[in-house]
Image 1 (cartoon, helix red, strand yellow):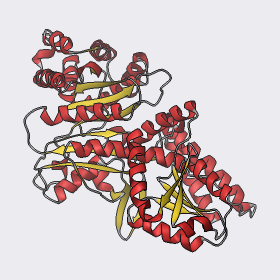
Image 2 (cartoon, helix red, strand yellow):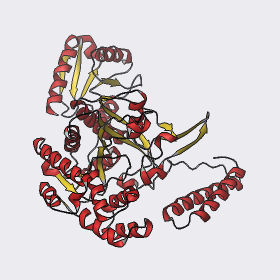
Image 3 (spheres, rainbow, N blue to C red):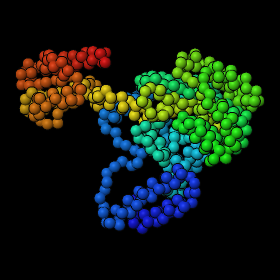
Image 4 (tube, rainbow, N blue to C red):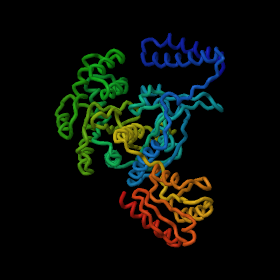
Length: 500
């Protein structure tokens, strides 16, 4: 943070913004939070105190080895599913030109992290991986790709750490870009959500699906002005967290919608079901006069039939309250939520079709149809972490298979000879970094870190050209000739692998 004078100036700017914030409670809260932080910093500066309070920035966290082990295993399972479906991977910068990001996220655009002008460019931290992907396609003239991307994104949100909502977090995205027949790529994205949540063993879940064209048709049929479609859509999107009366109040009092129009919307968006809901909506004479509604219903009917073929219908719900507030969605939209007891993390996967986003970056506005899904790895991880805590089980944080130990002093060089032999045969192994460690301490290390096998050498073993091979769990020991050690280890490790 800058000098005392800079802090005082920033405090003055905040006070002026607060006075002009009018009745926007969220903006007022954000500015007050900043003011309180600045006040604390001003106190430190003015008192001459330079004491550093060690903490992670608001909305971020550190991960210890156990947490990272669980996290990486979860990501590994997700990546294996992406690869099973034929995806390749890319990477993009964590910051983009600010103009690339603005105007793509609707009301959530205020959550974009601005970066100050550096080197003549106005930049912002990426808000998601979808808009950078669209920019990448347009910039490189790519019209067909199936890609996954796992990376950090940044949102100036009010964090809820216990529910897996952070300001810095990973997203795991899978997208299919290209001109294909209707709903074939879309249903595969739903199947990927299904496979990922099953593989991660998060308990029961439900995938909600809807269609943006159908929502637009509903808004038109209810009398919503076209220019208010997107802002009303963002209100409907809050139905998973807020009751209808609160959502209606926002539509009427904050967004200027007529109360009777809001009531009509409520009659539609509180419905959910399956194929029978498509049939019911087709009987609505007012709704089917809207071409976009008919298009949405046709698409949903086809999608639901494909879901039967892909064996995911049992966990699928056609839910008219699902809106997905981001502006770039154009077709089918979906969201997965965990339905087990005491699970309060919100959606763990979401996505949809965004056929016009790439064209926004193309000089000739050439569209590249796209559909994708994003898995919320932070929220998924918070659920896994909670499950592990309840079980009280210990997580192994290394993959070491063999520990090379010595029973007597000054045998470190012989340990090193064995160790290099193991490494050259792709066996994961380690030793103590002390020349003459106590044997008990070495064996306790094996037990603490879950290392399955230990090689023990002493003067007697060296004379006989053997080693003692110890099963750490059972504490059984076997004498193995030195020239047969690698063969025996590979056999033992293969058996252990099969048992797991």
